[in-house]
Image (cartoon, rainbow, N blue to C red; front, top):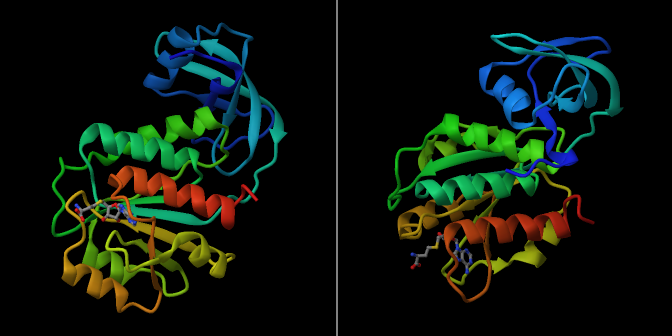
Length: 245
Ligand code: SAH
């Protein structure tokens, strides 16, 4: 990995205030000491999803851990777009890519969803969480998207908050054109649901369409891979209703 100023950012869990001492875990200590090759007194940026972004310095490199000290806040915490992505799990390299790109595109929450035709490896949530953190560090976000444990489609529907719009990516061609649908619901909390490579089963699409919060949307005539559909939908949303405006 090439290290540039923007990638010298680290997500930490500890509270950040001036003078706060942050003891890094083993993988992060390794990253700071052996990959970034920082020495005591050298600086990097840290964020925790709550206290904005801070300039920090390496305070101490111990055998077991690297210790940072927060110096000053350089960016205040800002609220980020409230958009979720629910998706049928994909094979390993594709799901990693989808999580990385969705994090860059600003999703607040990612939720793997088991559907009838899902045909993928078991979801490794810990790996996806690490991927989301790395993407947030790299792209300059102040928040790391939450990655939920997988749920079945029935559970997703049952638990979906009534006030949150759910745009279902419907490859059948009967959904509304996406830009118009997104413009109509701009300003609402929302999420997207992407089906598996095998597509949604007819009974699943029917169950989804019965929900008052669901709007079925289409991305044109070409059948896209699931991860392409996810990225395209999120990009449309950021442009029409999100923080690209
Ligand atoms: N195998 C299916 C295609 C599934 S594509 C078939 O042959 O019909 C995987 C998922 O990506 C779909 O369930 C849908 O959510 C999304 N998707 C792909 N192309 C799309 C399009 N043109 N419009 C809307 N959603 C699409």
